[in-house]
Each structure stands twice: as structure tokens, then as C-alpha cells.
Image 1 (cartoon, rainbow, N blue to C red):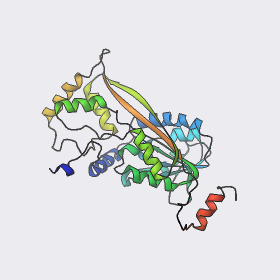
Image 2 (spheres, one colour):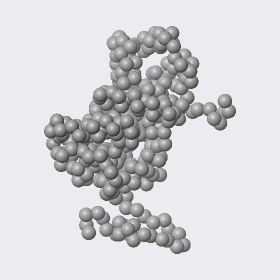
Image 3 (cartoon, rainbow, N blue to C red):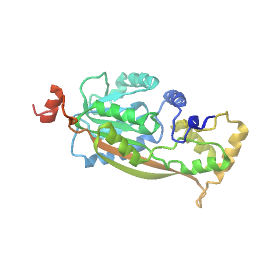
Image 4 (cartoon, one colour):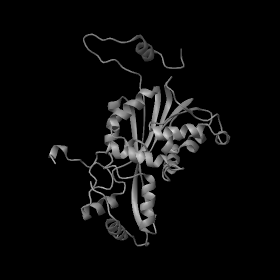
Length: 297
């Protein structure tokens, strides 16, 4: 393989990602970790003064944030945007069930069909798996109203670092992409047009009594979408080697431990500013937004 074409650790295989999303869409429940991360992210909403009248949840099929958002903003109008077709179909079916709607404090979310921008965009555990993160951040920026804010969570580069080291020692390629550092994500947010980005991180220690349970839980979170992963098919013999190698991760408490790095970020969409040059062209709509804030007409 040409060196310039060789996969690098942070690259994501877009085709493998779609395969994993289709597999996850067939499951009845969202990944077990995501509701907990949504709860932890919602705790950070207490530090934001703006109480949005409406918000958009990006990727609700796997984000599993309905309970956290209903508790935080019970009277806000909620919208869903599900970019994965198979997950979108499941979301449509979920919203149509009368018994499910009775559990909601308000009318419940609606699938977004375009229209006015929202005051908050919420994206739980979606950004790390985006093949083109700058493009996705720009899309989120476009969906927000001026002075609206973005809240997101994702995995950081130290996630499952013990498993990464194990694979390296065995010459097995990568078990997952090298997720982007939170400082680089902050730079991407500024480049996308956001202002005052605030980044935070948290580490979790996950433990298992048996390696088989560990692998089952990891599979329920998704699959290996690293472009630099081992290219061939794995065999039962390889799986036995993996299970044996995982035994080496047992700690003094007798449990197999892996760590997760969770990254949280939020930023605001500022008033648009024209680029200064010898001659500046500003649309009437942009001029109005610069001199008059929404809701103060």
C-alpha cells in the first residue's frame, strides 16, 4: 500500500460505520452507556442561563436522552433529527405509539421537517463517530438560532486505552479509531462559527467479572469502525486468544477494567459579523440580525 494511502489511527471507515448503525437499529434499546452520559451532560445545563423555548436532539435513536431533556426542559418544544435512515424509521414508529406519548410531560418531540432554527441543539454520543466532524459542526451551527447554544458529548482519545495497548502488543491493528482530543474539537467549533466554546472531560472506570461479558457489552455499543483496523476476518482461534489476553487486564480486585474518557462541550452561536474589506456586501436579513436580537422586534 502507498504510504499516502495508508489508513491512519483517527480515520473512520464510513462503510463500516453504516453497517454498525444498521445493526444497532435492529436492537430494541439504545446502547446501555448513552442514557447515563445524557444524564451527566444534563447536569451541566444548570450552568447555562438561557432556558430554551425549543430544542433539537440530533441522533435520538442512539442518544437516549429523552428522559434527561424532559426533566431539564419539560415545557420546551422538542424536535428530533435522525440522520440514519434505519434509525429514523424506528423513531417515526416510536413517536406514533399512543402509550408511549402518555409517558411524556409535554406533547413530546416531533421529527423536524426544516423550518425555524432552535435555541439549543443537543447531540449525545454522536460527534466522535462522525467521519467528517468539521462538516457536522457546521451543520449544527446552521440549525441554531443566533444566541442559541450547542451541547454535545462524545468519547475522548483515552477511551479503552487498555484495549488499544493490548491490541498493539499483539499486533492486531486498532480496536477503535483514535478519537479526537477535546482541544482540537474546541478549535473545530470555532472554525465552524461557534463562540465561547467550553470543553470538559470525565473519566469512567468500567469493570467486568468475565471477558465474554466485556465483549458483549462493547458490541452493544457498536463495532470497530477504525480504518486502521485489521483488514481480514477474525477466527474462533483468534477470539480465544483475545479472551485469554483480556484476563491480563484484571486488577487487584479481580475484575477486568477498562477506562472511558467522556468529553463534553458547549458553545453559543454569535451574532453574524461581516468580513471587512474594501467593499462589504451585507444582506438585509443579516443586517437585521446584527442590530436586533430575536424576540425583540
